[in-house]
Image (cartoon, rainbow, N blue to C red; front, side):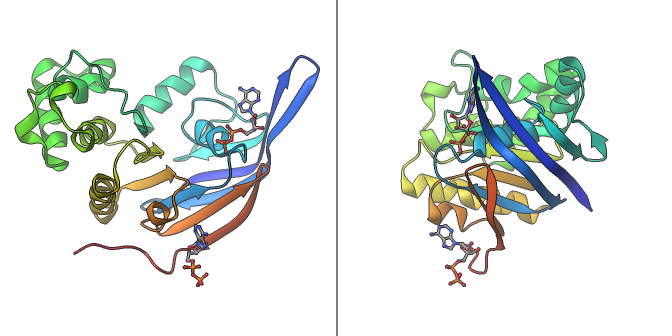
Length: 233
Ligand code: ADP
Ligand code: ADP
């Protein structure tokens, strides 16, 4: 079943009397459970597309259907609501609260979603367990390694059971050994049925995904099944 459908979406940025067409009529379909990597040179439109897919921004024209919701022309508030429900974000810089424990960081999206303290702790612990970090629940970010911090961020992205995990250069701040560990974790999440979309400029990272979409100048240049998926034992 389709979880993402973009129909000829374009995005035009206006700055004074200049305009930039960051996306030019992009049509993409992504099914539930797919693992997709977006690649492409700097300025090709990856962030713009991820922002639209993540409901952080809307297209200038065209339509975007996320999990059967037409989100192309929602208000800011409606967009925020659907974003909190449907999307788990993972960032290159982890974006954790420095003074909060792993458990508190992971539980944060549940505060906004209105869960009580008991449920929040239980769900956050389960999410930490899913990334192999249940024994670091009380640690603060500066007491964790880079890879562990990214695991906490991934647990936070998962805690709401979102439809899609969106990861923007998730290994950008990690050494290669740690990067491959994080890709192992993504592979496990994919095996469990999660839908994952990541942006990366690294070929060896992209090759963990099952489909690689390359953008160039705001257009889809190639959209291919990855015949050589990297898998670890
Ligand atoms: P990528 O993520 O592939 O580097 P972007 O989506 O960030 O590409 O940018 C695509 C194009 O849109 C670039 O030409 C960029 O300069 C332009 N752009 C991106 N964001 C803005 C913005 N907020 N205002 C004006 N131009 C922008
Ligand atoms: P083939 O020779 O059959 O094309 P490749 O190993 O070149 O096999 O490509 C396998 C997958 O990796 C394809 O989906 C392709 O889109 C992608 N791919 C190919 N070349 C590159 C590259 N330079 N960077 C990132 N991905 C690539």
